[in-house]
Length: 150
Image (cartoon, rainbow, N blue to C red; front, side, top):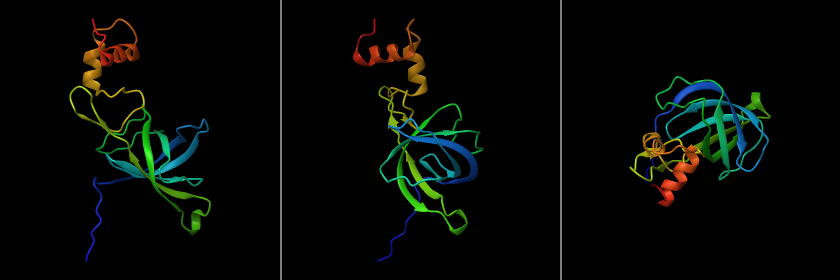
């Protein structure tokens, strides 16, 4: 039986500096992105990460790719694999992550990559909902989702 493995999204080969941290840790680590796609990225880290770990990733410079990763936001991702680097990079690990995605609670548009502050809404729905508020965006979204809109 032949098994063909294929990526769900095309990868953009581009090296760029990143910062990342485990979701429960305050320590920020430096890394280098090797490639990215709409669904995830691969990068080099100085220490081993475990598959299943949740991490926050921030790009330090804009990557010229079609998936539109933005230096202005954090990306929440799950570690899928981690392998030791090659002989030249003895203390490094190559890490593959999958961006965690969800759908907008109002219009079912796919939100990717998932931001921790999006409250389950796409940018268009967040803008529409928050246009009714004179308070903070977070309070407005919480009130709307709880059914407390006037």
